[in-house]
Image (cartoon, rainbow, N blue to C red; front, side):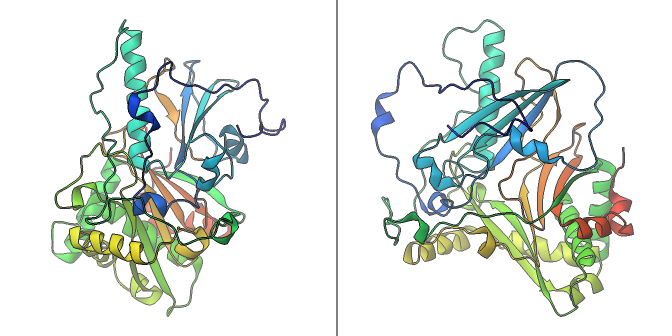
Amino acid sequence: MAPPPSPRSARFVSDCFVKPPQLPPQSDHPLHLPPWDLAMLSPWGPIHPCHGRHDGGRHTLPTYVPAVVLSLFDHDRAINHDGHALSLLSVQVTELADGVFIGLSMNHVIGDGLSFWLFFNSWSEIFQAQEKGAIDVVQLSHPPVLTRWFPEGHPGPLSLPYTDDPSSFLARYEAPELRERVFHFSADAIAGLKAEANRQCGITNISSFQSLTALVWRCITRARHFPPSQVTGCRMAANNRARLDPPLSPEYFGNSITPLRTATTVDELLGGDLGWAARLLHTAVAEHRDAKLREWNQEWIKRPQVYHLDKTFDPYSIMMGSSPRFNKYGNEFGLGKAVALRSGYAHKFDGKVSAYPGHEGGGSIDLEICLPPATMALLEVDTEFMAAVTVS
């Protein structure tokens, strides 16, 4: 287990290691990992909390995510390779003055964000069934598919071309000074962005999230004050399950994501309108199909490598992670609906944006944005950006 957090942050009370009373026969079989899993050996995540309340009172959240939140997660600053010694899944429950904070940490080699929330949703479903008196095995509404997908001709195991010394291919990332803030976008505001982007392009197929992403990309780039000729990019974590042919099950448990990149110059991005940027993103998403995914896997098998934050994500781009489609507020563990969602230290860098469903639902979205203090201050006075933000 990870060492307890600093007493200045949270007081460590107890810990335990949970194991099932009986293991299934196949549990001692080796689980070979495909390229999408092996590429995750260096970074740690995804890490997300569910912040539940029990006092029934009104909660006022601070403007910026306080640093104490990091101490509410186990395995802080661990990387995925540390899973050789650390637990692959950890739950830290912290009692607050007016509620409970549930911080979950999962090794990214085990699964992506969809898999993470599939597990958490299933756990909640089991709890709710037991609360209603179920004593036998609970039949999950969305049971995970545990068979890993491999490219044709490469059933595993796949070998990494590294020495026995992990330092030869691992890197521990230290985030710079960042300010984190969650911005709320109502369903009406997002619908307005989508309508405007499609109107400007004379089409109808640009999505709500592509329109919102285009807004964020433009406004963060403007706040950074890069020279006009600087190339800037926007990366999106693309779920590959439905893009393969034949497609994987929506309940495929593992990693099935790749960072999808769109790039242009600062002059072109800011010289065009919202629709121009949104159309760039839409085109990249539309072209992200079976052939490209298989090509990525074949290239990885020829030249295996693991993701490094300082190499994969450059300081001139933004990265859109997580998804507002995940069921993050529907989990119930006897505390009522969560008050808010926050994330831990993993994958925090200049330009990282995490997308959550809004607390009220209905198509609203919360974006957790990480920027240096000076850049954040400029984003907060950007008229195009703040016109779309709902300030409570």
